[in-house]
Length: 352
Image 1 (cartoon, rainbow, N blue to C red):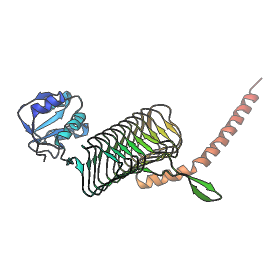
Image 2 (cartoon, one colour):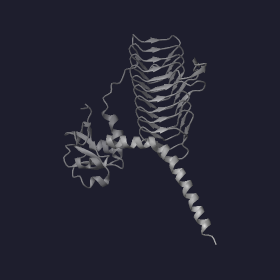
Image 3 (cartoon, helix red, strand yellow):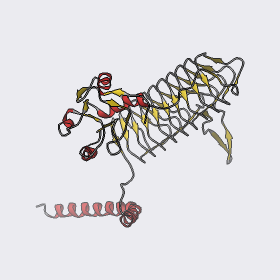
Image 4 (cartoon, rainbow, N blue to C red):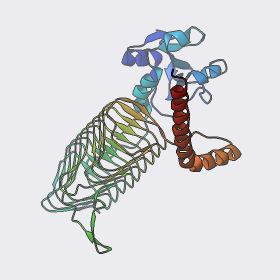
């Protein structure tokens, strides 16, 4: 449990929430409805968890006014409990804060620019002409390549790799194992032999971007791969060379975008979804899990492919029928032609 303590009144003021209950009640942490104990604040964001309101031991809850009607305990009434939880979570975050300065084991190029308020962790490497802005935290064993730039208040977890010419905006978070700026998958084929194409572009990230653990963003072949402001990328995502992702789009784990594709603003791409190369997805598109996008999307909305879960025996039957669809379609076309011929002949014979 966090060592910090807030009163319900303080939290209500911070959120602009309506307080129902004791303003001086102390809150020491956050927890789920099922696991909360005395001194902890919980929330109800999903209706399927409403059943836990009866037995929760939480000191108080974040609730909508409608849900609060069925709860007798102390509460903070807000329009969006999940958003309120997200805002309060930072108050109880126990992530260590690195002190400003350069660790003695770090290697900093003589012509690199590191702001005095930045923190450079143990065994980190900052190469020639790189720029590290104010308040940036670089974790242990990170690698910052030549001419790369990190703007103010960024946070890189240990073992993040930025190749050369990677430009990062303000307040960017990058988790461990992420690699930005690796060569894109570019090769020219000559008589069965692959010839490598030099990837001479870079990577550009906007402000307030988050990049998950072991996610990879390849550098562009000529122009930069571009990630817009506020984009959120989960773990183990693949972003290929020259991809462009619009502002405030979010992608879940395992998703992938092939080279030179463009994704619009405020899109959501669920886990394991994939996009082929050289297509465009417009703004405000939701792509469901494991969907394969093979052509451009020009209208906002939700898109899916594949089949939903079935018992294995039923799925095998369906898979067999899928393989038969082409033959069935051809036979149906033949039957339609025969039916049309018979109908036409019948109409001819009925004429006076």
